[in-house]
Length: 154
Image 1: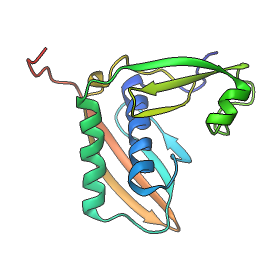
Image 2: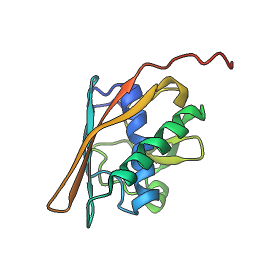
Image 3: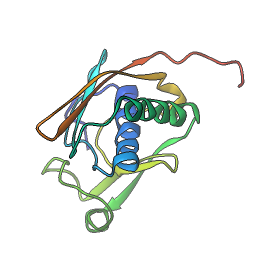
Image 4: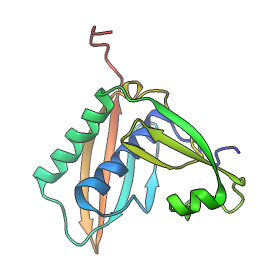
């Protein structure tokens, strides 16, 4: 199976962590629309109200905690029927293989995905929400990453 979009592995893995953070913090579901680019990316979520500035700061902080935790990013494959029972498959392309690729970010996130990812969250760098807005039940987050900086602890 080949990826149809040209995602940057760091940005794409950060999207997974952001999605799971949004699900845990707001119970809003994963993003329904995302645009992943090298310099900046955005994710859209269905929400009833706009998160506060404090809530947005907590999202950024939590994503960075997960990144710093140096979690392994792994893949497994499940038969389509089993994957359908465990995951929402509606965002996968129609012609996806019978074996569905599940990408796991440590024990923090797991979801079906066809894109490229880093091997460990530490490769992502620092996550920063550059802006956000809320309109007509849609909350949009725009974010950037900075390069990982060795901390000397390894």
